[in-house]
Image (cartoon, rainbow, N blue to C red):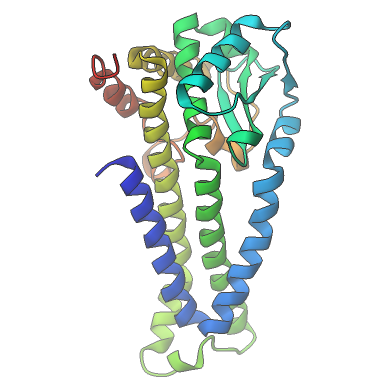
Amino acid sequence: MTNTLKTTFLLALLTVIFVLVGNVIGGQSGMMIAFGMAVVMNIGSYWFSDKIVLRMYNAKQVSESEDPQLYAMVNRLSLAAGIPMPKVYVIPQDSPNAFATGRNPKNAAVAVTSGIRRLLSEDELEGVMAHEIAHVSNRDILIGTIAATLAGAIMMLANIARFAAIFGGGGNRDNRGGGGGLVLLVSVIVAPLAAMLVQMAISRSNEYRADASGARFCGRPESLANALEKISAWANKVPMAASPATAHMFILSPLTGGGLKSLFSTHPPTGKRVERLLAMRGATR
């Protein structure tokens, strides 16, 4: 299954979970209230997240005269992707990392840390920027917002059901009695967990897709593979002061954790990403 089909399937699965849980917990009216609340919350994130996150990391926009190498690189890759050139920012942090943001290709930005500029060669940096350009081209911010809206609505429904149980309510009357109580309990506990897992899976699928698209844009998948290995090694030595709410945006998660935490990771394992990229050598030339 291609990453695009996988993402579509996961979004459909998230929608099915929302519909089923909505019917169990709140009926049609509960579904619409939760969905409306989630839409309102996430629409603001969709429109203003670029300004918020860039300000959060003290990112400074750079012009062509200030950084001609990086500017020319982003311009070249944007032409290869067939999108308008995003604004270019540098984050004053030593930890090597990068991200893309913006609601659509016409209102996008790419940002790199000062640490990644010092760590990577020009070819490796181009691989990283190609990955970020691919996120813009693939409209991954929009996909992530849709996933967050559905997952958020499911969690709101679960919270509504919890409060209803505490204060003597019963959720959807059709499910009271018999096995309805058990179904409601399972929905309240399992549904938010399932929604979170699906949302994380969508994020990981988007990362694989951006790797593949970026490799095609720059023509050298090994450049991105080498960059990922370097970033991964140095990120542990020089950790980044990053918010968990924005960890999914970076090329490698600035947050550490393995084992069970990997189920909730927004990024695939670096080793698997490198393996896939190296398997593309020759196919992109």
